[in-house]
Length: 296
Image (tube, rainbow, N blue to C red; front, top):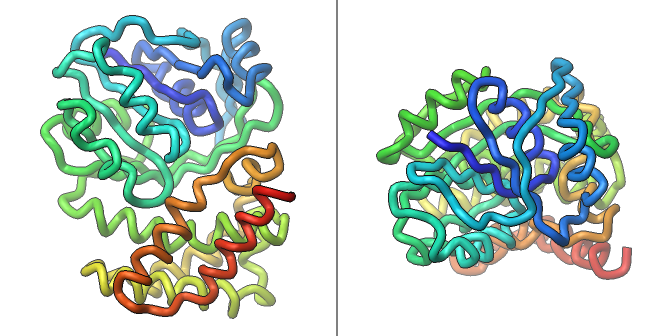
């Protein structure tokens, strides 16, 4: 199976390096990509991974896809708000036997692109942390990958398992999305607003604030028919103490980029309104981060 990874940010770069040890991978970076120097180093020298383990990897790179081989796995690692454009751009060059895999934060991404192309779409939820610390180098933690149980899930499972990821297939990807959303709901906005590394969220001074955000999300999930284990989410707070990375949202704001806030906190607020639920903490975070996006 040919593997194409679209999006040369921290996650896309990490996945390209990790998977390329066992498979041929092409990494696609947009012409206007914010990390131009990063992509240039990858083209000339390869990718250096640091953190959990150190790895140097060379991958094929391109700025533009003009042809896609039959039976390809197209792993879309762009921000959530760019996925629809990716699908539109691939009309006419992607064959129906190719499979898309979406790994974005938040919820609602797959629903946005359904119908644009007839191809199978696998939704995946990951627990991977990655940060570009200098051009060509990504600091990362190897996390789990959970795949929606679709026609090609077994093939993709094999690819990620062979690439040393803890991988499983689920019949309830919505539950996995909401579980991760309940974690992202406080990790991304709070680290961005407070300008702190992820590990600082485990400090006792922030526990009350974090739990209020979590409880709002769990209440909305319940109305959506999704049962999220509160204890499981709370345990995540303590585990954050070992993660020294900056969240993706914090990195985006610092670089003057648009965040995925609308797919995380915005999606929570939208569904809360639908069910008549009050989510004041999430509304405060939403307004605050949008302010930072505009003026910060």
